[in-house]
Image 1 (cartoon, rainbow over the protein chains, first blue to last red):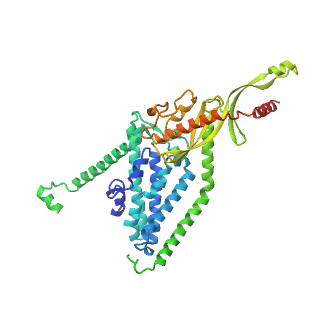
Image 2 (spheres, helix red, strand yellow; image 1 turned 90 degrees about the vertical axis):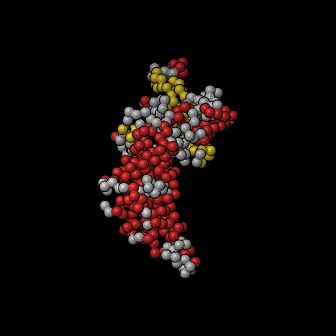
Image 3 (cartoon, rainbow over the protein chains, first blue to last red; image 1 turned 135 degrees about the vertical axis):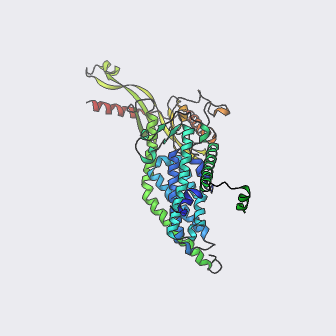
Length: 224
Length: 231
């Protein structure tokens, strides 16, 4: 993996670093199944919109690019919404509103503006995919933590995504359900913890890279 | 990038129009491809909810559903086997036949739409017994906030079962914090209130217009069906 790939997944993760797309991230991440579906649709929309926007990037100027980008993104979101209704109707009954709201996810317009309109097709698709994957992973991490603590289960309703019987997927945990985790405050709390965890790992990693202790004077000069 | 001053306006408009055309085309194709399945999914979901509703207390095989004059009726009957009083009186024959011993319960089912949800319309099945009590409630379609306003979904909570056996006389139709008998959802009062109010309004309407009970023709038909099966 080169640096470009890692950006979306880690160092420039849309959810944990750029803090974009918080509305779906906070609202839908109450179970793993919901997180998974929303994350995958977002990933596909992001990849698709980056592809198309990169393809037509030479035809767009300052006055047309924003309406054009929004139109492309909205079309992909609507297609995604229809596909979820077709193949995962029960999940759509649950999180349908938030699938339509993917169009307002700033990550997608952000990548269109910040990357796809200035880069070649291959790079734009890769960027859309890794950014989407970074978002999906963050969403899944939130889903796992919130479902385990909030409901005391894991992988509930997964059969609505993959078919079969719920008992094939469901894991019941011994802890008492803690409702707060399923409500918006719980979502903020978990997101904060995940960001803190990521920063902690980054710090550890940076310390390992430079084991020699930096003297205060040095660090000040570094900052300049 | 900034070409806008040099590009004539009709070029700009033309490009956007062309792009909208392509986007529209893509949407039309996906819409046509998925329309049928989505409609079937909606119907199946509604039917599943209805059957689940009717099967909760009685053996689902016992409960029958009939459609008559655009209205849905349900009824459950107990079958007797032998001679009904009438047959015995006439002394027609010694032959034993199944007959309808008693109607356990009967009532009607309606699809109710309330526009007062947090995010627009909520549609649900409401089954009411002819005695005036609620047989069951199941939500079919809604736009409520997932995880917050969707606790009427049975896979999430049992809230919707609170309506069973309630009537205008034996319940106060409001959420608990406003003096009623029904729980509100944590963090969402508008949704349960909308459903509660819609059911109460409907029950009142039922009282005023003394609606048709299960048509006796239906029972007669059922009787013939059973007897022909017996023969």
